[in-house]
Length: 164
Image 1 (spheres, rainbow, N blue to C red):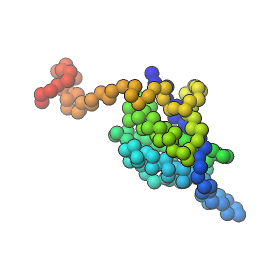
Image 2: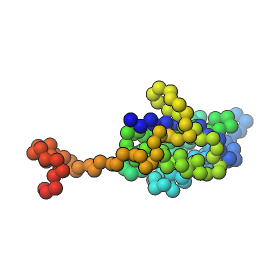
Image 3: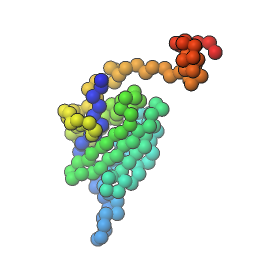
Image 4: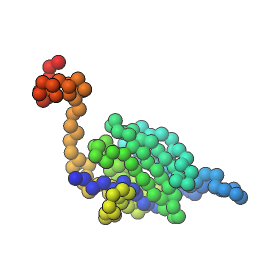
């Protein structure tokens, strides 16, 4: 089983883009950082929404990669940021996207001290990678049968039906 760490804590060299007036916070900080993360995700082949204001929670992105839907939230916290990356952690698209995002963040000189931990489940070790394996060690995707081919295989007991 792959150990998935879906929350990153990091520092980033971006101007403070939070906006306050005398009575309240108009825009929470982190929009620029979230925009940079969106660009990284687009660079690895993801379809990404524009950063959406999540108020005190920061900024959110909806992500599509290899037919998988994911969600990301970036929250400014003191001098750093917290990134939460959620999706189906048993799907290869999710595992590849989070791993490639980490590689981009580690290579970008604006991002520092990127450390990943589990957001859900028992607390585990902190690491500079979101997975305990590399991209080259991810299992091969299994081909999906169309519903009709699945039905034929189920009804007639044929695996890998090639004729219809």
